[in-house]
Length: 240
Image (tube, rainbow, N blue to C red):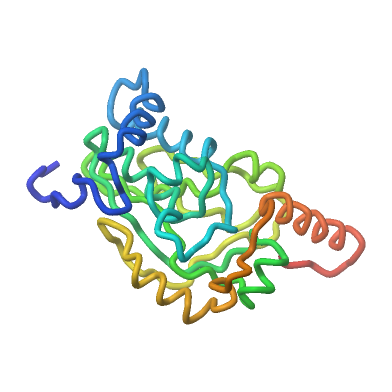
């Protein structure tokens, strides 16, 4: 790998990928303890971010802390951007270059209340993390914790450190789960102002003072179970 070809911005702390946070440094060290080399360390970190930080779509998207690695770590929950930031920041702590990737996705893992506010199942600026391992950039998506996936009947997304790990197209019942719609490219840090402006333009109801709160995971599981029950009682295929 040509070290000089990887920009310093993918190694240095950022406003949101705050790899200089003492808490992030401690987390990265603890999660990667016992690793024998970089890929092994990143597999351990991926699992820790995916499963120890619960996915929560009911975060306040107008609050910068919802996007910041150290804040997401402290809260032990976050949405896709914050969790990708934590993985990216933890990688930089260990000397592994990282960057954030963004895309618009059609996400069938949602709750009725969130869908009602958004009026769409297209999630703009969905985030994943890219890691420089074995001389190439590899995509890793730690958004959905394994316990949530299991409750939803979706196989947890694995990462082997060599091949891209982006999303599960179908759940265990064969229903559509997620599909990528628009690729927005990669960034060294979160383009917060751009994302916030886009969210306000397309998800105005989510910026209201009476923002969504509650147990997103339980609501999503209940909605998914309802879809399964409807499939069982119908000859038509149900798409959730």
